[in-house]
Length: 384
Image (cartoon, rainbow, N blue to C red):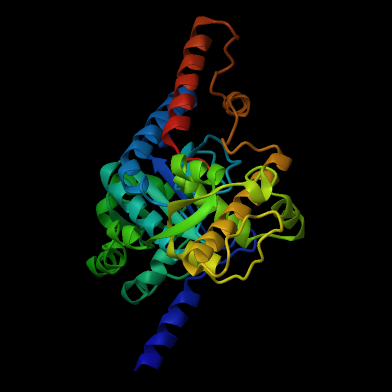
């Protein structure tokens, strides 16, 4: 019986899989389409999206603030043109992507957040997918209508008002994205999936956000003072340190051998005890790999087993942080995301200023609104 269930689950998973070679592995994508964007245009739509963006970030912050993401935090960006990789529509919307890597908890925590967002902001329709395609359908595969398959599910599956919606084939044979979004606005009572589908999905995410807290691990480590200070003030940077260590290559190892940034005094550097929070997946990535300390690293005597174990784990974190820092420095990144100049250029390209002359009263008003939004979104959003 167990074998039969396993085979059935595998079959349904393959049935709804729509993997694309163009999509990054282990990444979930999502788009939020406001009802107002179906009719609004220009600066009116952009201003509404900016406001919605900040409201959503504020809304999810209590859930996400204490959490350490595996690779990158849950975030959203404004898409004002068809250049967005999430969709080929030019309709303004919010979009995001989240690489979850070895930690599947991140993906389902993101799904939980999207359902919460849809319940709190009911005048929005949300799409979510990953490299397996419409993975929410996989979760509820035994409760779906028989006509629904990868060929017929395109532009039909949405989250709205806290529920999963499937645009019925009897109403729209081959719907465009815009047609489906209009249907959701006008006849959402017809698109709401069955109670059994809703139950299957709610059972999958009902344990969040508590489950995320339980997935966190706290480890005692000995690290250089500079590393301890960084992690004290920016604890989420542990994800970058683990990523730098786990994905190291020959070139990045050269930086770890020198430790120019975080071990400037070499063996004379003081190691301090710190309590570091990370996901269990991160902890496993650190402890499962053998890694010899650089010659310049001040490891304690192996005879002191506790101190040595704490220092060994801390050494991997410090080396990962060094490798990531040097790599980003080389690439000219400062970790703050898109610069103001690029942000402004993007607004101009997408018609935010409506062809107004620079220096005019209306241009200045729009510029002030854009600057205020940029500053607020930078301060409330966690960046990589």
